[in-house]
Length: 300
Image (cartoon, rainbow, N blue to C red):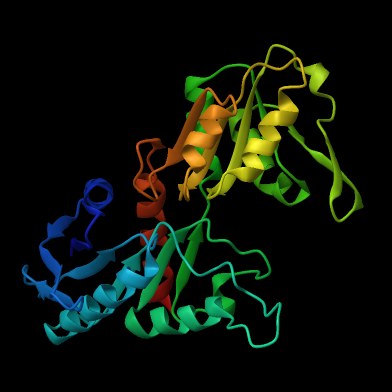
């Protein structure tokens, strides 16, 4: 039984790439808004007898969630028993703790909402900062895939003499995974905090790789400020001008322009969020994740 993939607006290119990997078909889905802003959803391709996937990156979750929920419910009314969601970028993972009295822990609430709408979820590198897995907040089967090996393969096939750079100690495990596949050395910036506003950052042992191109790697490039500060410190070394690689091209505000202005020679991202910097295709990784999740799910 072949998959039928319905892409939410803005996701058609990535959905077609996934369909090619899964040898799936693309279903037609009409999504628009009434003059008062309410969403209108219509399923145009009959899903009878098919495995169904909704494809929707959740870069703008407040406007994306309701069309996902409406489409999933309509598909069930049309006889689909299992509606999966492929969302390469999963939103509402940041607020995973109550820092101030009265704050909503939105990651948990959003997980409940999404779990009530779909039957399974596949995503890429969600921001699991204080949580060990998605299973802590999602009640449906959920696969969190890792783009590190794909990025490592991309680097190994296109660049020589690179030095992977992590902005802080929290990034080491992730940066090491990329470096291992790319067969490249890596360093982690060291921070010495003398006070709330007095932080010294050093680039350890940079002189060991004078002919290497530093490659800054991070999961989400949002404001870009961490990378900009890292670039400033790298400029004080004998290393070549850096490039930046991120999984999720969120680029809030002027982040993209700020990185270029800071001296970054190239910005490369995965296609979890559509952006002109997309150069690394995640469809092979996601296809494998979908097939693996469904094998496990059907074997339960």
